Length: 211
Image 1 (cartoon, rainbow, N blue to C red):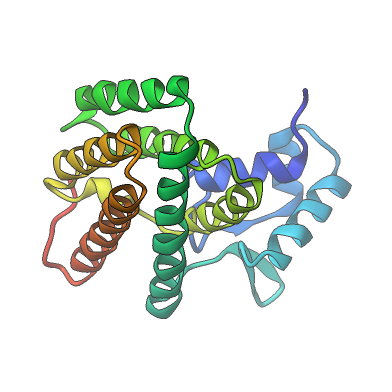
Image 2 (tube, helix red, strand yellow):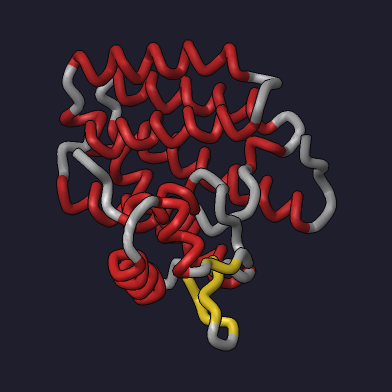
């Protein structure tokens, strides 16, 4: 199925093709995506309504999260992700658990490599936990949260040493889900997100270097 202009632009922001602060020009997007300007205009208006884009004079640019917005986003994400893990511990199928286990194992090969590749693997891992919660309303809310995560210019996996620690945290989360321990899964995932936020703050404060 052919993707619409909205999906294509959103995916480009999530992939880092368009970064916070980049200006999006309707005519250039239409040419790049191979579509007319009308669906691009409608897509840009929709993204602006969702606060993915903001106005700079007459131009639309990819939005940037300030410190307070980042803290608010992580506060919501921490609770929702923790809830997803708790529900996954109750409702995940055997197949979903096996795939989560294989993801955690396979991602070990990415340690020390391209942070963006590890970030993509991380998104797939978290998405499966969301789906394994078997709660469609929670999945919808987490999709909104993760869409806003695309407004961060860098991934916490780019910080030295974060990849190894994060993957160990993934293994703890999977172990709790596999054991059917909802409380342990909830706490493990909340801790995981909290440490990712801490890493991001330390990078911004200049305490940690990016690879």
